[in-house]
Length: 222
Image 1 (cartoon, rainbow, N blue to C red):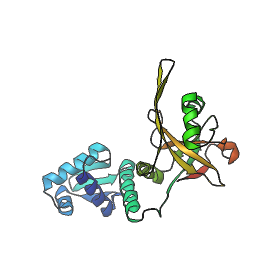
Image 2: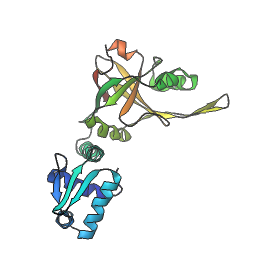
Image 3: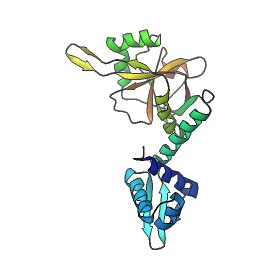
Image 4: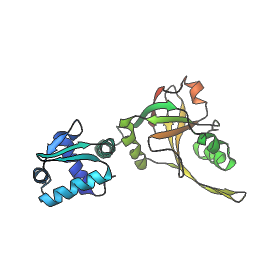
């Protein structure tokens, strides 16, 4: 996220000026008028957004060429989705779309260790298949993922076994079509970036849904 609400507001102004679709050409003094600030404050705001990686900025004699990056787009998408959730509660389910990828084997690790396995059975109500379906989210769904923080979660507690500590995590029940159900598993400690989710289910989802690497799939968070 951007460091301050002022930064987010400035990012919105840049988007309204066309920064999402192409390059916006503007001087700090012109931008100051858009955000109702001094030229110095506007300049600092642009520097802050650039430092956070939310915009690229090329300073030229005739002004600055500014473009919102993919990270900046994610911030704006998250803002949009949160407002949509506020004003249309319950009518806009969270749907995450992506493509199936080969994972790192973390899923089998979590689903077969007794301390995790028993919690999945007791808290989610199903016997997990020993493995997960790994999905790399499309750009539009990366922002949607932040809305999981607004959903009820199933907490998987960490535990100690044979002098070894195992971390906890969060689960979110989902449906995958054709009546297939499962849950997103988000470990507290994971090697995956935010654009990848792991789905646990009673089924081998690749076989059950006829999926392979590259297959497109949408999961609906319940």
